Image: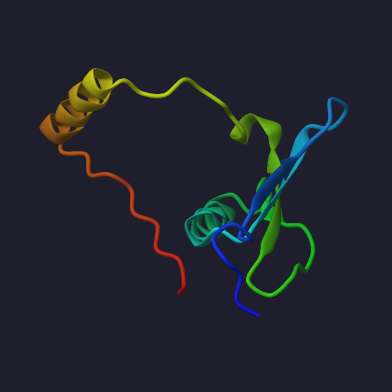
Length: 97
């Protein structure tokens, strides 16, 4: 069964007692990023349990979850120019389609 964009949700759960959070998602970009992070840090970011077809659930440390203020257009431009001058290319995450 194919899900609509509104049905392809991401849920992040954690409580104050635990050091970890659970990330459940259908988002292909986030799935690719979680898999890539798992490959680099398998002891810290790992699959939690089998989920519905097309979805994944990973355990991550709560420090990986953040909410921050948006970049201003000026800050985005300045940072982009700094990265280009330093030869740093933006990351690419390729998920399976």
